[in-house]
Amino acid sequence: MLVEGFAPNEVILLVYATAACGRASSLDDSRSFFANMLPDYGVSPGLDHYDCMVGAFGAAKKMEEARELIDSMPFEADAQVWMTLLACCRRHLDAENGKLCADRLFVLDPENVSPYKILAEIYSQTGREKDIAGLKKMVRDKGLHKLEAESLIQIDGITHKFRVGDTAHPSIKKVRKEVARLTKLMERDHGYKHENLGWSECGGGVHSEKLAIAYALCEKSREISLVNNLRMCGDCHTSAKMISSVVKRKITVRDTQRLHGFENGVCSCADTW
Image (cartoon, rainbow, N blue to C red; front, side):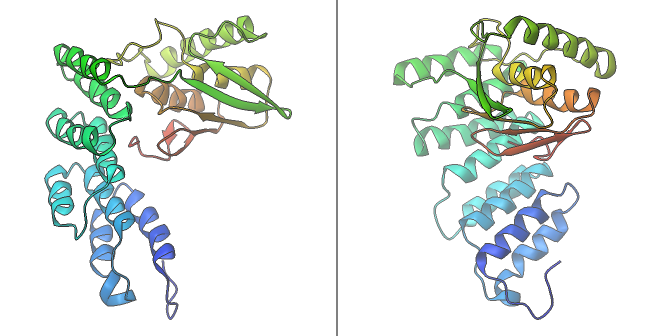
């Protein structure tokens, strides 16, 4: 709640908007706040405020309203706005609107591989595997650079790096045993099944996030906080939620999209990233 008699600036209003629009049941509150920014506080909504509102519509599965808001913006929507809506499409497995968002991103952010991967995830879970080959061909034809996924985690002041399918870390055998143990717990308690990502890029190797989390647990680290150089895939995101539940620990992951706080089987991003 904003303090009565206090005149907030656009940054404070952005923080408030982000919190309001991030709540699952807050669409009406978000609409009211957004509509009253100018009359109540004398602040015109900026691009970041519109981005928050697009996310609120998308989280509520109001894709048409989100697109109408984007079309009505007094300025051009940037890549972040379309990425926000694309993330919502991934959450709701909306292939039609997902393709529309991805097509815009291919133009606005042509060097970014993430939209291709997110759309591939949507296709893989909606029975459109044949369309994934076309996305991969586009990436090859455009010569887009594909970074090797890696996760960094600091234990006792020492930074450890894990890559997909890592074999180089000195504790990798112990780490892999811990990954296997966690997988069994996830299967037992949450019915975990490995998600088909639609974008096979690791040759079946264990992803870096799982390795880093497992290592932190092996070392009995007080804090489990890692940084990724790429966006978390759907399977790692699901796994982090489940692991936080089965081991009763909070896990923090900073990827290229946002800061994820996993606790008791739930992520702070509300599965939209």
